[in-house]
Image (cartoon, rainbow, N blue to C red; front, top):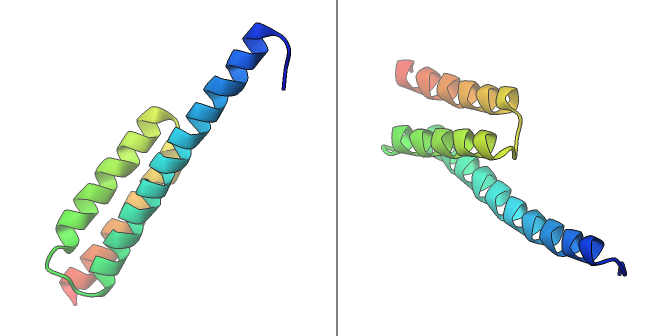
Length: 88
């Protein structure tokens, strides 16, 4: 544990941020997985889960959790799966 006051605060703040980021990233992964399951299972709510996952991905980008290109890649792949399902 650091002795300097500012270093002590840094440790506290970074731990809080780490926990918040981990929670948000977990929720993001859950939303993406739910969308994938809904799409592969031909669920009626596949479009809704895709919209929710897209929203979570965009929010994660704005908060700096994931890179913009990574989010766009995930959104594109999900949309591609949904379109393939719609055509079939």
